[in-house]
Image (cartoon, rainbow, N blue to C red):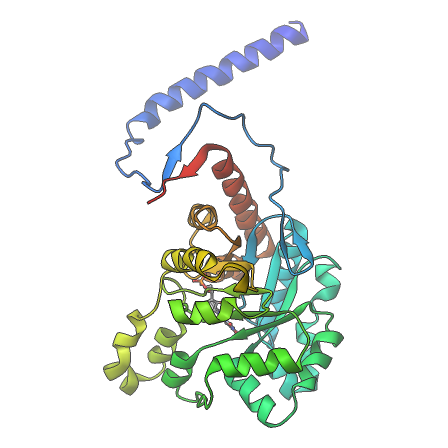
Length: 345
Ligand SMILES: Cc1cc2nc3c(=O)[nH]c(=O)nc-3n(C[C@H](O)[C@H](O)[C@H](O)COP(=O)(O)O)c2cc1C
């Protein structure tokens, strides 16, 4: 048989096998759920190329895709392995990342190297160190904020993320007492530390008035860490049975990422040129690329989406599992951008 005939014979066999499998699978493919957030428009575009990009900037860095690896961990052998995997993936796919609280590196110099991800990340990847508001409050009182400058410089990080977590601290058995309004602490930090700053919550988001104040500060970004995903008040109550018995209703307090996008859109109109922060990281309960795509498209700000627990699930498994997950999140947003528009409400 000529090679052309051989190819035709193979193709015809493949088609026959596919047709048989369609018969077998069609009855299992009855769908009754519709994602009502989108219009699906199959008529208007060709397939996206797999290497298409969706560039976005944060501060003076550029990312290839609007996906942020939210702050999680660092400082122990196990967590360092996870951070290394996250950093490899962030660099490979052109994402940005925050590490989990680096307080341990301020307290113990031997731990500094645990956060030394810049050699893995390369020069271009956005990389932020994370501290809690209670820690910053204490450092202001002790006039020791310069240690943060030094750490950021040593680790060649781009800046700092401060997590604002009064409910978590209250629920936490060994939690800190917050003496000042976090807004005041953040303002002092901005005056004394001239570093790019991102402010986030840890699973309950920010209400309208808090967002309004934050947006008027010269922040690099606000990360929502909204309620609907990982919730650190809930986590602490799991560690504290007595408090859980009485304070559990607080778990349900806060704002969803969708509600916060609406606040932010409204505040962009309301604040006009009083607004100094232009970038938001929409996080808290983002389970996949469609949740992220929907909220980015709904937002009128420079917006990316952030994920923690979904990424962690894969990072714990292996580098290959993490890379595969992220590869498909990217593929997902590119397909969504090509064929889906959001329904405004
Ligand atoms: C294992 C783990 C550790 C976390 N540690 C921190 C932390 O150290 N600092 C912080 O600001 N947020 C921390 N977070 C919270 C997330 O950054 C945040 O709530 C974000 O909204 C994304 O959460 P989700 O995608 O899991 O819902 C952590 C989340 C997880 C899952």
